[in-house]
Image 1: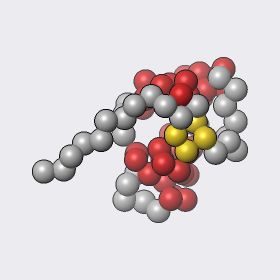
Image 2: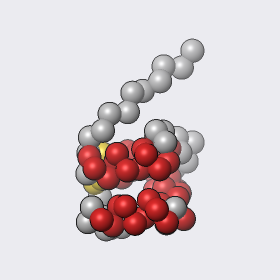
Image 3: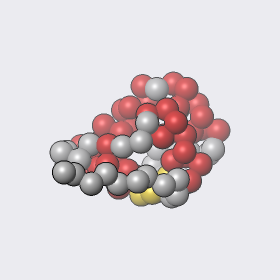
Image 4: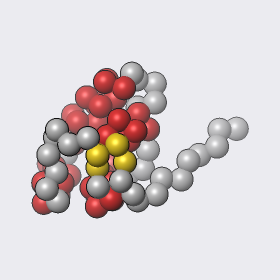
Length: 75
């Protein structure tokens, strides 16, 4: 039986979170998929922009992680 990881609200590297959402993809592909999900989810994109999010940042802040979990669900 697979043990589920508890996802706490804390800063995460983008690659760490992306691979949690797409564990079967290579890191680059997982990052691209997460970026696409964010882009296609207008309310999430707007909410992230309100936090100062920029697509080139390497780390999601705790607030940004909370928003991602709110709009996309936990990995």
